[in-house]
Length: 61
Image 1 (tube, helix red, strand yellow):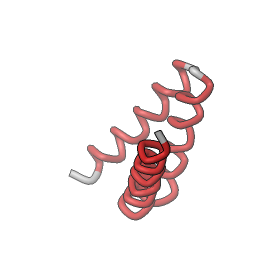
Image 2: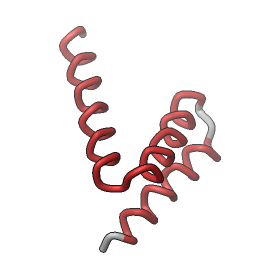
Image 3: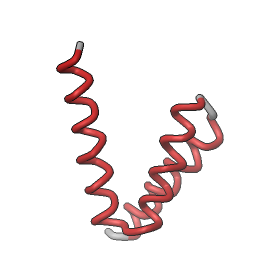
Image 4: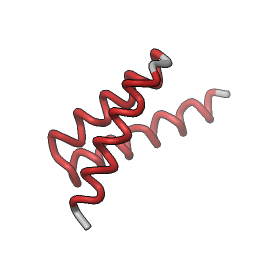
């Protein structure tokens, strides 16, 4: 159980850093909104966060 928690935390840090490097401040804001929505189980925040990240991803293509 401790190992899976450490792996999940490391994965979250890697994803956070990748988003920050790739998308800058808007990516960090989108990721924060997404995380808040997932933690609070708020569907609207989750959708807004996903939409921001998807739009940033499509903008770089």
